[in-house]
Each structure stands twice: as C-alpha cells, then as structure tokens.
Image 1 (cartoon, rainbow, N blue to C red):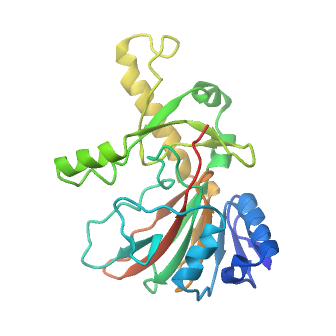
Image 2: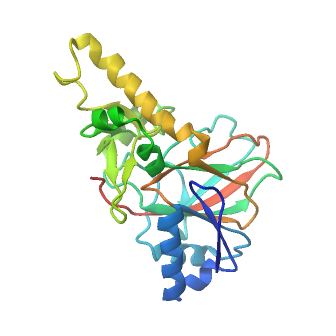
Length: 282
C-alpha cells in the first residue's frame, strides 16, 4: 500500500490496496486505521466491492448506525443510500459544512462512503481539518471558548422542511444534543473545533464575565458562533476530492467537517455511506 498525501493539511490517497482485503487482514487494516488518524480522510480509486464487503469493512471500525431521515439499504442496515436525482431540485442537506450526526449524544466515529454513480464533472466533496482550525485560532479566542458548550439540532436542519407535527416528532425522538465547542480527540488527544451547520446556539455564553447587559447576549454569542463555524471555510484547511464510480472515502468524523458540492443538476449522483457509531464528545 502506498500513501500519497493530497494537501499539506488533510487527506491522502491509498494506492495499491483493495479495502475488501482489509476485512480479514489485520495488518492491512491496522495500516489503514493508522493512516486515517494521521491524514483524517483517506481516498481510494477502483474499489469494485459488494455492499456486503462495504459493510464488513466499515464494521471493522465499529458498529454501524442508520439515519432517521436518509434511507438505508433494506438488506444492509447502516448502509445509507444518498441518492440525488434530477427530480430533487430542492434537496440541499449536504451542501453545508458539517460533521455527521452531531445532533446525536454520541456523534459518528466516521464513515466509509462509496460512489455508485456520479456526473461526468461536478459533485465533488470537500473535507476540512478542524484540529488545524482550532490550532490556528487567535489565543484570545481559544481562551474565550475554552469552557463553552453548544446545542446541535436535527430538528433545525433535516426537520426544517417537514410539517410541524413531523418535525416535533423528530425532535422528540432525537432531542438537541449539547457538546463542548472544543472537544478532545479520544485517540490523539488533539483539541478539535466542534461546531458546524447543525449547531444552533451557545448554551452557556450568557454569564456575568461575558455579558454586561442582557442586550449583549444574543449578538455576542451569535457573532462568535458564526465566526467559529466559518473556520471550516478556509481553503488552507481543506482537501477536495473528485469522484469516479467505485471511488471510496474514509474519514474521521471527530476531527473533520465535509461539504458535498451541489453543482451537478440535472445529473444523477448516487452514494452509499456506512456510518460508524461514535462516542460522546468531552
């Protein structure tokens, strides 16, 4: 296996390997996992694997989970089908910078995403290194956010276009989760900037040391949150991947965000993602 870094900040392509071999090869899987921690997102071409192999490889990282809104393959629970077609002009849930399922108490560890069908051009996906985003924050911002926490909501994102009764039912099933604004990576110990498109507000900003008057609370907290979320937009933290049929991406959801570029209508784009159960951020 050859590892070819794609940028100075994030991302590497694995060459000369088939992930199906790593299902039973402990040494190969250990190499892939170590590369994932180092590069945060890994890419492979020409992975002509079955759905069963896709699921079996992803399960080497941990148990898989379904998505309550996106549909899964009926024969392979945990294999979410992200199928975009020309008759879905208003389906825009992916083209925002986000980490998957941070609206859960335990957001995903990561995912294995395979391209089933893609347009001849367009439909790229981008990833950002949120450990580097934290590292490069001004010191006074690091001090300001050290103890802050924030809410993440499926109701305000996937639920926003639903009828009110269905939206409320979704929130009842998945209440807003609260996470630290800066989480620790459970394996590397790095500090990660952990706010994204699912984050609605800071929950403990309004304290006497931050707010002179109540009027300070909303603009102060909102402006800070928008600034923090915008750090994923910085090109120096990013890698961009152009899909081909049977290309695969594997990413660490704990230290990255991603953005699916919606520039390809009226073409088809069909992806299948195995999302891996994660841990509660601290």
